[in-house]
Image (cartoon, rainbow, N blue to C red; front, side, top):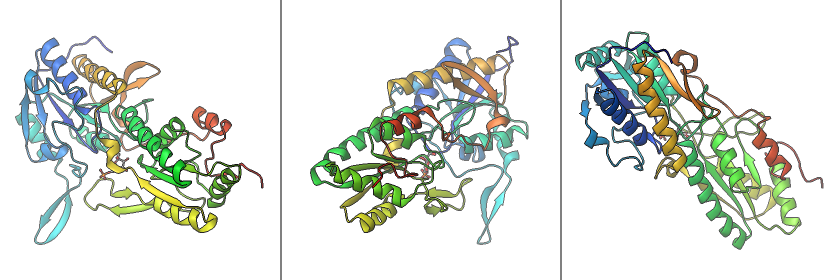
Length: 373
Ligand code: F6P
């Protein structure tokens, strides 16, 4: 970090995109560091970029952020629909995507915001980058249960989501075993398989399906059938919502027109249930964990990570940095240019050590027959 001090008096803070456990821990760390260490004024922007567009801002004091370290969600609210560069405005019965970035700039300047700490994932960082091009300054803090932001080896919220999903799969395990069933548990993660991979390995799932390794139904059926023949009369399949068959597409649940990323994935577990049941005649059930994975109390790891990232975000902006993303790499916190990562995502490499370890333990990734007939 450069030692040059910036003349910062007032900072904004906002959370954008899908929520996750640990956002409040960041808000607390940023606000307390700013007030306590640097005597700054902190202004909360409500509901992500929507609050900046609609000028809904409110000053945050010490008391507002006290006792929120363990609280899930975000006290500021969030939105994953408001991109200031393409904001839907309805006129004469028609919706037109309009560039309202000048309006955001006006509201930020009127509130005296020298810089904004933006807590978000790839979509939120892309929106921030769009506003940075118009003259607003940001420091990003990487948030998402998907763990798919490039430039950082972990995002806060991921560890909690992995724990939540693992606990749920553990519970499914006992009922699968009692009823001699194939249980297919669908987890979130969007286009990346980090959540499925980690929760799948942690829960000892027999099959793990991730977007990065397209599956074949035959390979999955071979695995559960052979387990059954060897006396293991149940199987657990953890499937990422973005998993897809070889040569096939991801399963889209719906499209949300006014969202910067309109695709919402979902439904793969039900498809697999039908496919496996039809081919193997084994009793199958699908369980979709959904937004449960985004809630709850952050784990100790996420609380510590979020606190460190929040503190570092304030130190960075006080050192004169702008339009950077605070990142965590190999135990160290640093920062990289926002422009380098905005709108990009990080996938699981096919040779990831955890994939290799899981394969060695006999886990199927649905891509090859692992039990020869
Ligand atoms: O990016 C976080 C995430 O929870 C993804 O894992 C999931 O695909 C998506 O958000 C769900 O979005 P929404 O809250 O709009 O349903």
